[in-house]
Length: 116
Image (tube, one colour):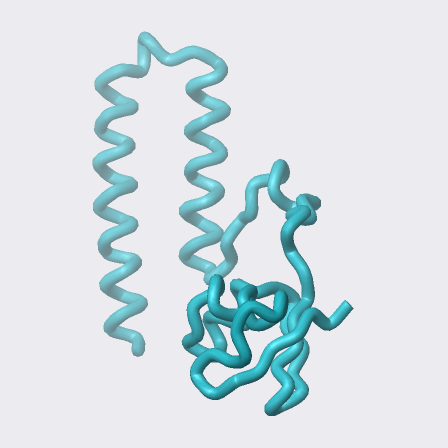
């Protein structure tokens, strides 16, 4: 595991040094907006090293209109979305939706229904 972290850090360091070299080359042409973008990019790189990923603010409060909770009847587990259920069970999302709407009985031997 430490080798993976060290290799990621080495790659990030190489990218950062390339970035710094580019800044040195074009420093006379930079605008304030360029500097703000650079600062935001550096913050994202630092957060990715710490294991945190910064979700853009425009997506933080979005509740997708087609996101509905689904329930697997075999294990009674409730998922927050069809996508989450598909990732966890290996079923295709459209197959889960078909089961919930009554178009098909089951997918991969699992029965589904909307939880709400």
